[in-house]
Image (cartoon, rainbow, N blue to C red; front, side):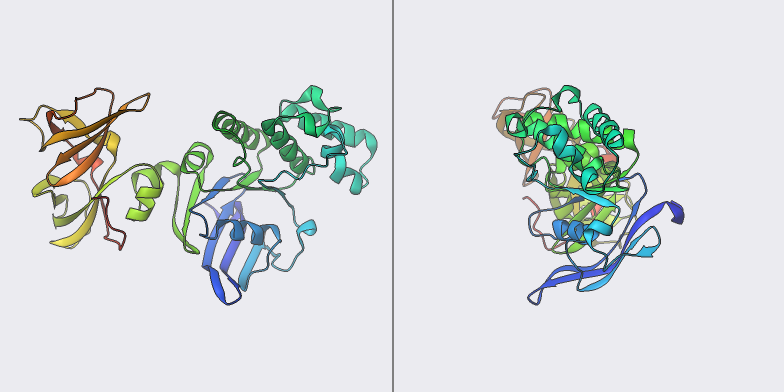
Amino acid sequence: MQEQTRLIRLENISKEYDGTPVLKDINLYIRKNEFLTLLGPSGCGKTTTLRIIGGFEQPTAGRVIFDGQDITSLPPYKRRVNTVFQKYALFPHLNVFENIAFGLKVAKIPKDEIARRVDSMLDLVNLRSYGKRRVDSLSGGQQQRIAIARALVNEPEVLLLDEPLGALDLKLRKGMQLELKRMQQRLGITFIFVTHDQEEALTMSDTIVVMKDGSIAQIGTPKHIYDEPKSAFIANFIGESNIIRGRMVRDELVNFCGSNFTCVDSGFAPDSPVDVLVRPEDIVIVGEDVGQLTGTVKSVLFKGVHYEMMIEAGGFLWKVHSTSMQPEGSLVGLSIVPFNIHIMKPTEEAPNE
């Protein structure tokens, strides 16, 4: 990707609170018109990173570069960004139209231009006829849309979203995931989204930044992060996993569960310890006499679109997702094609044995 498309750069950003580091030498660039998600568990530093981009926090060290200019010391109201928080902070004494128009009135935008831009925002969030309603009469999902409209009406170059879907129920949250992606694509502006929900990240993002303990653990597209996690932590955080200790025999050959398996990975030293990742949906149940492993079904759980079976094979309890159910106690074979075996450098995180 060419340099001119990089809208925001974080250069060696660190942040401490009372001497305790919460961000450690963060280097990250964010492209123009990109939907980028900061993903990680509570306390990993993702919201602090967002607040530094927005100007609500000052880094202890490092610089924030916006479109080639150093904005590290610039206050939030002078930055070309707006923020939507989990708590929408709508004004209860103002109706929907007045809530969206508030920032435009403060900026002394002409009334006819305010009306045009607010109507355009109401169209964007599919609430065209709601302008005169009280905000406390709206559902949680509608209030969230109004908060987004209020942030977008000022035409920022970047929209920051700090877990804005966290207060919604499951059905609303899934619907709003699609709505947010639609808005971002239609407007063509940069969205920076913070969440601990891996499904949200996989559904909406162009790029995912996985964070852990104040550092960046991995950056990539949703597919790359899911298919090629760098560590057991990332594999377990993004989707469900079977992770087992193994030994690299040589390039494209790994040993685990007492057997050799062909894989597609290379570049590991012969006889070196590795972590082996196999996703539950990538294991095929076959006849007991034809599988690479033979095991016993220990439990079966119906999950709606598939069955989740725990199968003990090769001294490991495998999680397997399949549309065909094998009853508890039955003897089955497990088949894993080379492409679905992913080799990682071993980490301190214990595999899910």
